[in-house]
Length: 155
Figure 1 (cartoon, rainbow, N blue to C red):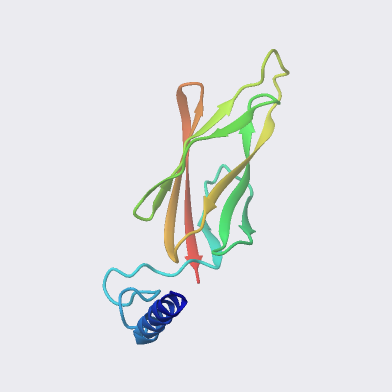
Figure 2: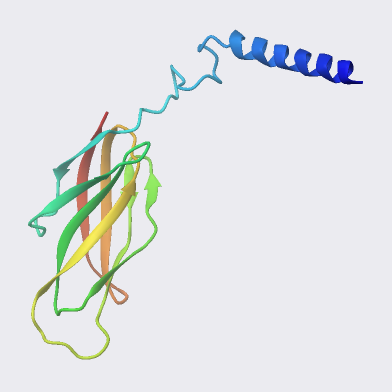
């Protein structure tokens, strides 16, 4: 009985070894596909090519992961202190990213003084290429503006 199991295991191992050695990297199953329909590699850097004029500063955050992940950080003007950002789901269509941003007012009364709301938009991992980010901004059910960003993801 033991000799049958040993023979079966050695045959199985030999078959798996033969199968793994026969792959020369040119087959479609092997890692990166070359030719038509191949996706670009993941980006290792992200450049801000264009930002809304209403924003004085936009920072790009790079998070260590495999592949790298990115986020945009910026301040948005709010009519009173205490507003908080609520982000919708990031949608991707082609090379366009879209994310709804709701500015949630504070509970209760507050001073009428202009304030900055800090916003962080996680973009995740991006493939190399040009990307467009659209961020419609809402206060209540009313869209107040749409922020447009142009990004260049490079390998």
